[in-house]
Amino acid sequence: MIDKVFCNVPWKEVHINADGTYHTCGAQPNKIYGTPAAAKHNVHNMTIQQWINSEHQQSARDNKLAGTTEPLCAMCYHEDAMGSSSKRVKENHKDGIDPVNFYKTFDQSKYQQVAPRINSFHISLGNECNLACRMCTPMASSKIAVQEIKAGTFRGSARMNWTEDQQAWDHVTDYICGSKDLEFVHLIGGEPLLNPRFEQLIDRLLLAGKNNIYLGFTTNGTVFNQSLMQKLNAFRHVDVGVSIECTGELNDLIRQGASTQTVLDNIDLYLKHRKQGHVYVTVRAVPSALSVHTLDDLYRWCVSREVDVMTNMLVRPAYQQIQHLPQDIKKRLIEQYSKWEHSSPAPADSNPRDPTWFKQHIDNEIKAIIKALELPGDPVLTQELYEKLSSWQWLNQPQITNYFTTSIKA
Image (cartoon, rainbow, N blue to C red; front, side):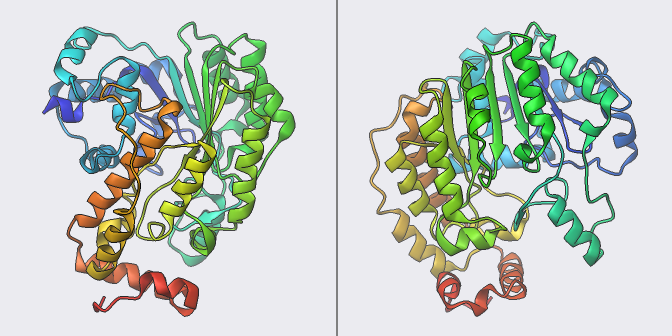
């Protein structure tokens, strides 16, 4: 069972949420916002070293070694079941632990005796965002926070930004830039490129001589800063993750406030101005019941650009999971995705983060989508999906209605 659960993240990574709370892993939902734990486990009241040595993190490490499942890890478990490459698998791979030869490679890693050695930081710089995506939350979008506050469905702050606390900011950046073990920094938002702290941290890393690291960030693709590219080109490896769900009107409706063409054009700009072999562009999609209808067109576009894809199969909100589409629509989509032309598989032990295997990675995502389409749906969640589509007035738009027309009563 440990092969389905073990993850090295509690030994390797520090995650900080938009509100400043620490988190075991960035792939987990933030369940402590507004709770007593949030008052304790945050950058305002606890140092990074105290968090690493905390009872919470020690318990997380013990549970991984015991093969104990963690409900907060549902997204990785779901992706593993679908055959998609989860964060758990990707992070384990950094230490040579691969799912095919798990027990042999795990035993060689000697994690039973390994003490925490933090070399990775996954940091949200705040929830400021210019989009309100249908699957997102107030924790990652100030626009959604404002909408939900007005609707009475969210009682938190519209803006969450721990970086405005100068003392906390100095502590975190000093710790990162002073770390002798530093190998990975990944920045998210909100939309991180709207936050001035983003470029400040880039400058601090360069000033500290930390350019020999893997730097990643996830952007919604609505912003392109050419001068920033000159700084990014100075790093050994940069992964620009661009969030886009599919093509055409569907993407614009899912990612409210975005222009699909603008995002695609900005991806081309990243490809044009990047330094080959140093800066890579990765499309980060969240396959869902909303996007799956034209997602394969986006994948074809990625193949034409030789752009890698790294997805997180949607888990929350549950009604947007692919499997809850009506059966006749799923049958049509299975036929659609079954026409995909696959390449020869990558070696079983290949690095899931290696962008040279972009076509094989996309092939695997196609297989994972078909597998999700083959799962039985929940009629209650199917009904909720169509109630949402109706409330969003999607079913009043002929070009969109065609994707969701069903002979089955929702």
